[in-house]
Image 1: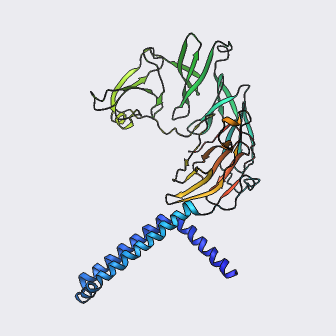
Image 2: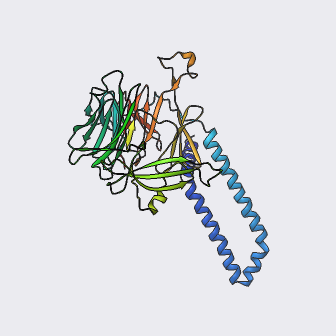
Image 3: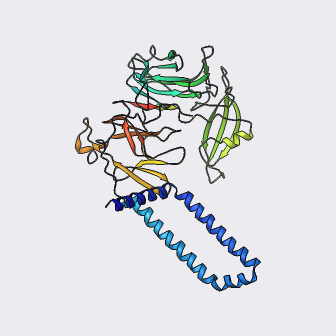
Length: 421
């Protein structure tokens, strides 16, 4: 029995190694086959006697190679099918087997999370929890500066800038005096940091049942100056900094009749000038899609700052299949199993996610068994970790590589985020 267990353990490790390094092994095998065939060809060309021998056995050799390759492919296809669809899920019960802590995780990653009007931070190993900011209104979103040293916090009526190094905040703008009336409403949105992290632009929208007004502003943290951006002839939808952080641009998208034009969109590009009534027209760029034409703009010496992804977090939660920077995938399949794809060849089920009925909704109008308890998942970019927001269990940390999952120590979070560049 002991020998059988040892052999079984070795076989499992071999299968796991093959699964983890399938692409590499396949490349090595192909390279070896090419070298072998090249060696045979070299012998055949340089030795007449060997050439005659090789010629007599060539048909048998080709047949053996073809049969061997076919056998290997059939075994690999069977293994891939078993690994992805038929392999029993290991006896891990969620949430009963979740570890009480995440002390096994690295301390260098910090999670920022919001609960109501309070912003806190905590290390992913559950240590060093801090309260960073408190507001009387709920926090709607927060945005990291490109250098990670400042944080813009948007509440229902105000914008604050928090310096993460000295842990002090300043009030940037407020709608409190203007929207205290029930007939008036307003909000802040469209935050865009400049590349140097010293300026940012934002939109202040105000409306009532009779009218609406949208204004964009640029705030300079160096001198505390706020400038308005005016464009009376066109409504600004979004702004983009250039790589020098000196100019702002916006795009106006116009659909074209493809019966008359060879392209479906024309994108007009304007440069916004501070405190001027009219934007400067730069170019009209034909395009096949309604996305920013970066290449066409570079030819016109307009270089937009685009390295701003992943630094803005809000109450709108993302859910579904998520992909790491290195290409690994974590998702939920149709049977409610959380799965992990280490490489494109193999998918592995980790555990089944429970469902729970929402207390504030009639069970007759809910999905069978209720909603999945996992509400949000996200990779911490430069790490092997996935942060999970579970409606019943709070924030969890998952390492899908070694199948470890544990409680971070936050029971309830409205939304979460982190700085990782």
